[in-house]
Image 1 (spheres, one colour):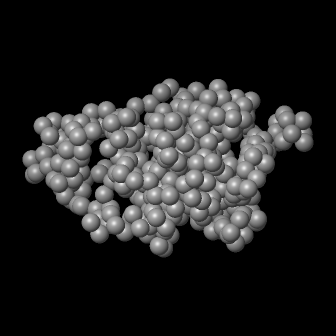
Image 2: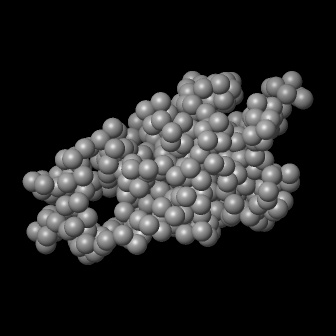
Length: 390
């Protein structure tokens, strides 16, 4: 741990002109004697990046704009089961195979990738840590087994967000993006990279992100896992519940993401998805939530907007969108094979940018949740203000 802490301090304190220049040129990313070892990071080199062979040249993608209906702590088992049943029903609908029709496809085309927002199963409430640990589930677990059964039945990938817990992180609740594959198993678990600070007034979110525990996370999983890419046989997929973070989106693209799923609830992802696609020349899926009646403590609107869920091509053109703010679905066909063959990265002038990034000092440093875990949103807000003023 001490070695990692020292490496990060050296990085954030600036590596000097020679070190920055070498890093910007892509020749000294892990050659600094006291710097971090980034050799495991899989990033594009001269337009080439790591992939696995595609199973088909084009894929069908569906983005389900579903409601947010939070589980009730007082009746957790029943309300969680009801939400999971609703998710399964929507997956069946997306595949044109509702149980009411006998469970076999009678309408539309098979979807190869189904995308959902960050809280379709559990919903969102300002739960305490004790409550959130009851709401969160393990991965894999009964919930992912049920979704995995749908993925296996339809031979597709299903991406969704959830609150998760992990035996290696006792007390923590992780805002997790999950991708289940056509064999029914989890193929990727992608932690939320960071939370936006100051968005919730005096409070702050208590779900653990990579940034909250950066040193230990890197020690356990390596630098490449801080911004992960699922390299699947339908394309390289990244999923994020981080809003308004264009530099994170760009880094995911530079690491080879071909499809970026943006799953933030409580507002429209359409504009962010459009900007991310055009700027980074990738496909984006901005999947938001629908109008959500009966969500405890919140108005029905829940930040939903007309045409709030979109699928965008690398030119920034909308190729699929929802038509209203109700539960709906956007669909599009993505020529992933042709995109991979003809992809051109937007050139990043690293030699100009690296010196600024290496010397910039954020007010809120990483690792806030390594020393203490706030029990409530108010306590998290206090922690944020304390860390930002120190």
